[in-house]
Image (cartoon, rainbow, N blue to C red; front, side):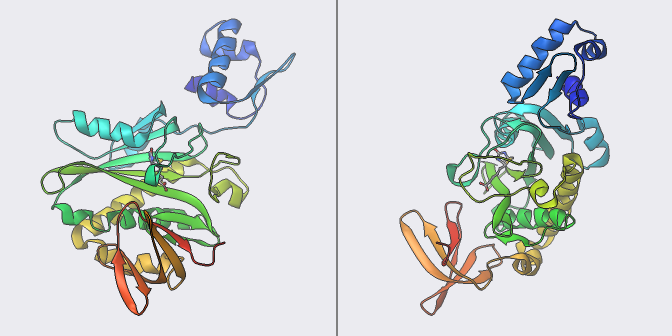
Length: 318
Ligand code: BTN
């Protein structure tokens, strides 16, 4: 399938003969494979008599695992399709005798997971969907503020793409001009008081142009930059940035990155509404503490809030 897609990826017409010769199969076998691409991966292929076949939209596949493993400190697994890279990473941790770092990336997720039980829309070869497995050494304290550290790592990696209005929204969303461009989901495996590992799941909207099923304001690098971007290059940058930030976090905790995080926080000093289940708290954002908890000033007092089920919105966001 990947060999066929590498040829069709240019979006130009290719005849059945050409594709058959390339793959060493008959024209009718080519036709069957094209049908599978449509059915399994949701791709749209145009067939025109006398011209051949072409993808409705050009695409660029990710490089293979050997390419990344030669350049990154972590081994990398590149999957074509998976339910969720986070779930795959959790399965890996369950089966491994000893947890060692690995990065799992997929062209497509059929059941991508977002925060607070929401789905993460993950169409084939459009965006970046990756999960990095990290053993947690040094006890549960290492987890304090970790998801904010990861957000900062993604922020650092995206900064190079010159996206006006790029910033962080507590706890770990990345927005560009108020629209979400990336999200992060950390999932824990094992006992935080003893031995455990964490799955760092990162989704970045790279080349997606349409996604009517997403129920919040979103954008992608391509929508902003007006051109298709190389996901492999971005994956490399994200992994390198993550490695640097995780090393700083391991040495000094989130405290070492707190100032930089706050400087990138879009809602610093803004009036917000924090929702936690049925509880709704209004206040002004005063930053984050050394454990990554949100500092909210309300009725003359500043309190710290943390937890995966919390959600934040601007007070004047009607
Ligand atoms: C959010 O809701 O903001 C978090 C989204 C996290 C999505 C990523 S995509 C790769 C990894 N695998 C998943 O199933 N989810 C995360």
